Image (tube, rainbow, N blue to C red; front, side, top):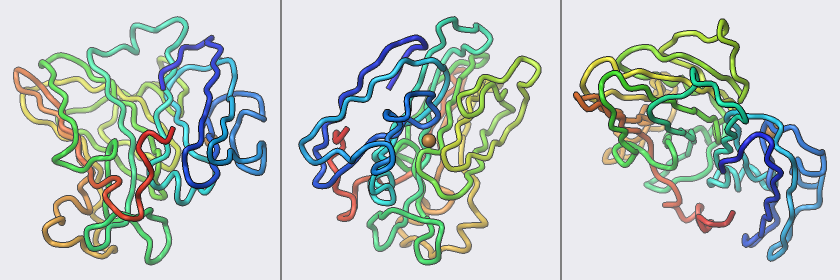
Length: 272
Ligand SMILES: [Cu+2]
């Protein structure tokens, strides 16, 4: 979803799931009744019913929305999305030539099927996706040397911290959890740790031609989880890899795997 600061929005959520649901707007300042937790601020939306979420957008930056009913299953099967809010007065220093939003998710893969993962024994993730895809099915972003790319990294469904590293040179961290950092608070780095629900906006500059990977560093954890089947191994632990190439054309491929491929994961993709 893309909104603008100052917008008055109304989002009608129609529940076409075979069970109840709600939607939470993570990080937004809004009336309590619009916040989403089932049985806490609202009764859950029954199958076939509609709930009108309405609020005025008073912030800008990178946020997310997700199911807030049966979360362990619904959010873990992909019922979430990016919520990007453009500022009423854009700051040219925060603009980039290209933009990419990266939603991180962990899965548990067993015998070729993906299931919701949890940070507990027997359910730990061993398969990782960016925007629902594993390398090499992830996107590629083509850039020219000298161009900049703004990446919004979102911890949309993870129980662990994901260190996201971009090859080819440092990026500038310009926002965290939707909050734009003041100019003297912005800093250079080449890795940021994305915890559950966290967001980082970074601006990366293509300094040299080539194929530059953004990826998740997961080796330690990989060694503690069951190996994926051999044919899938290179999409398993450590596979959360974007690809971005920077030839005289720079580009950016994006790496991760397996959504809605399992019997456990059968929600229609357009449920929201
Ligand atoms: Cu929240």
